[in-house]
Length: 211
Image: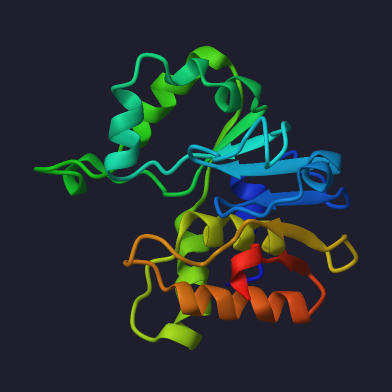
């Protein structure tokens, strides 16, 4: 990534450089007390266990803005009343907006609709830029080859590390099981997280079944 591109501050202002950060994935085994003690708590999509086993705080909620999951949320009249949505102070959409001409005939990008749906809440919505996706594909390509399709969790983790100074506390990553939709390069993402942990920039708390 070129020196003049800062994928975090360009699209995600206001996140503390030095505060503690809990990044909460969807796998079980999260320590609710540790998560809730963090200054910043980032969750994803439907946030399984929110309000219970994964803790009850959220500052940022990442919502996948392409594909069937967002289409489902847009059709749900009660989506904005979900506790995790109501309590989030800001939202992150991980994919940049596709031009209209690239979103036909069958739409896959619902960024415009998501922005309209979230607007009544009056909270910031940050869209991660294409430059970050380019960097994600490069990082994962070292382990997976080809043109890998990064998960939302990976994109957000990469954005966090790209925007934090070397002296900031390690990001605490909870509930990352590196499994799910087969289109994501899970083994490559696990390898990247392991390298980030070895460098002291991230601390990975694997689920109990992770062996």
